[in-house]
Length: 110
Image (cartoon, rainbow, N blue to C red; front, side, top):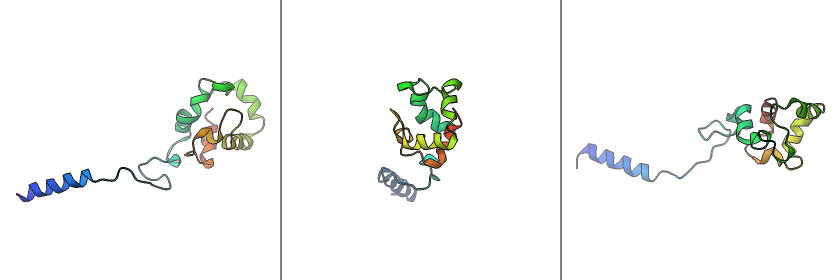
């Protein structure tokens, strides 16, 4: 067996025995944790599931009248509601990947 064939064979074996997955903390890796996503990405992938079509009376994104009443309580309270959940909306819109620190980024999109 030639040296090149042996190297190719080793690479082939190494590829087949790769781990199925890996865990990364801090959102800095290729796993794309919540910290790596922008507010707009969070809204589109999570909040938008209900706030785009208006599911369960969720105020629709872009509906200024529906958001005006909610905005009167202030951004801090709106962030608290998003983090804790309200009515049919679960805490953090049901996504444990959304860190409270990212909710303001998502909240100002609507």
